[in-house]
Image 1 (cartoon, rainbow, N blue to C red):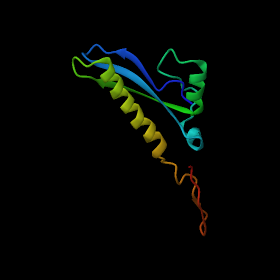
Image 2: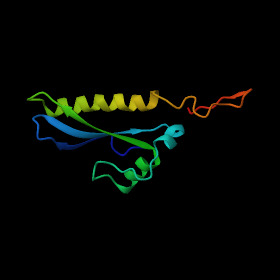
Image 3: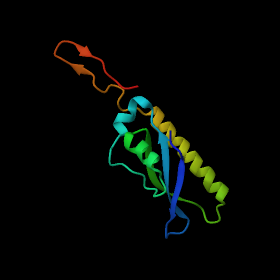
Image 4: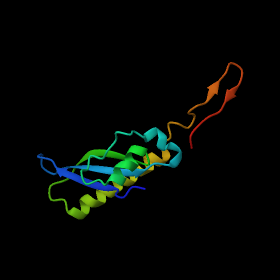
Length: 116
């Protein structure tokens, strides 16, 4: 399980733009598809456990940029990032490109595969 969900990384030189990272939990059956032994977080504050979870595919990270209106409050920015994180977590949970992964045909019979 991700120890954090949203990490603001830095303020960009352009006015009212911030770079951030989102961490989403990956359903267990799909973790092998997200695994990459060399993977580490863009956040230098990530713990060894955080980076191990990313490398194992237990957690997936997305780094992006948010542009906010001049005069936006911290609470408003936080609310927008929380909504963005929820969309990301929903995407990881609901979009499964491996639903038929490993389905094979030997010339006469189909063997149905798939990852939950």
